[in-house]
Length: 416
Image (cartoon, rainbow, N blue to C red):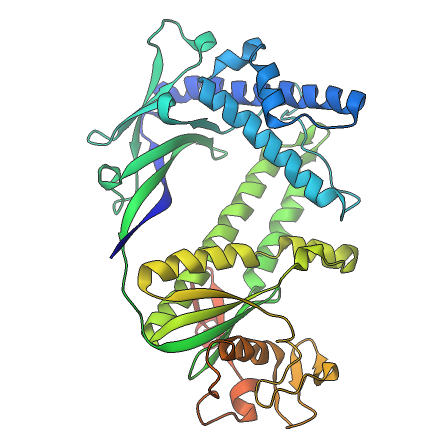
């Protein structure tokens, strides 16, 4: 069986020198459109107390000369991004006093190179010759047929001539040069079923994922994520300029985002592969219902906001669909305080963050493992095999992310 999915492939521009100046102009224009729209929103906000919606901003911006610097759909995409940024700010401002609205795109007296998105009528793709033609806006054309012809190269395992459809192309400045991102519809072959076994996952902030397989518990800590955030956030603050983030600061943000994305993709790839190899066809994932609405204090709220449980679930869902693993979203209510052996739900059983001691049956174990087993038992009521000893729950395997190999390995392998 095959399914249709969306994938983004990165292509390096081979004729960088020939098209760099043109792409710089487009990136600068995208920033200008953003800034004018942001200024307009600010004026309306001061007069009415409300931020104009996407439609109002588009209608106004169409009367501005900078609108025609880009293809019409590319200009519209900039306004859509600004509206999304305002919406994200609205969602945050009720929880964080220091949350700031989207700012202007400027570095002193200059503007940074913004990403430019080309939709259906803004590009023409020639996959046979690895070329794509990008449209300029009317203001930047020297003649009516003026355009940028970019020659690109993707990874050896990517052939864009085989994708169902290229939906849009994005020109992205990566801090050193321009690159192309192709957002494509692709057809993927799927497995009918990986097996009949059931596993449960407890998602967390310290241990990003704890998995209860039929025969083993495995912890996947987020140590490397924490280290990256500390390092790149400091690099970002240290290079903050008087007029907003510097180019070095923006590069630090991009590197952190890239590392986080790689981590979550590697984690979910590893989890689904483990399921397939262990004959697991059903995976129950803990879902913290309404957790974003909870108030855990200033520090706690920041951690909750950065907790990527929804992102992990989405990655698991589509990767599982491809490989025959059904991924189910299950409410995690009471799974952290309920004993997975006898069902006692005394709150004090959770002695501390990582320790669970049942006051009824005497089970002593890792609290996250206990929660993961409860998730597993939401799907299968049968006990965890014949061995429910304390050692099984208290001493799980630990798989750490190894930066050198870019994979998860057992703690012993990473240390060596």
